[in-house]
Every structure is written in structure tokens, then in C-alpha cells.
Image (cartoon, rainbow, N blue to C red):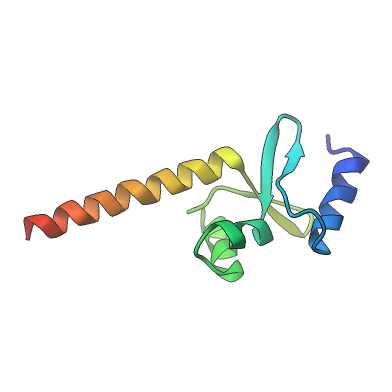
Length: 92
């Protein structure tokens, strides 16, 4: 269950105050705006990745959130694909 402090903290982040992950229960979650600073993707691309399941995330109210674990797994998967692509190029 989300407490009032977390909700108020999330609203402050939208106004540009304290851009950090939101902690819900025991896990950290990033808002799309935070991911724009972390990933080389636009806000719209990140939202599409979440909607299509490429980047596991949840929509809570009118905002999307991605857990830190999901973000790490997404980045690991991208690294593996890049390695596979490089190996294929070497074979050709």
C-alpha cells in the first residue's frame, strides 16, 4: 500500500524537485522522466517500450513506473543483443 509521503514525493518529482527513484515497499521505482536521464531514449520511446512489454513496468494512476530490477534486466538484455550482433558481424 502506498503511503501519503510517497505520493507527495512523487508529485514533487514531477515539478522537478529531487529527481530520484521512488521507494515503494522495499523496491526502488523510476518514473519515465527519470529514465529519460538514464537511457538514450525519448520519453515517448520509453512509454512505448513499457506498453509493448520490452521494458517491464507498471502504470499507476496516470504515471508509468519501472522497478530498478526490471531496468537492470532490460539493460542486461540490450548488452547481450549487442554482443550477439557483434559476433554475427565478425562471422560475415
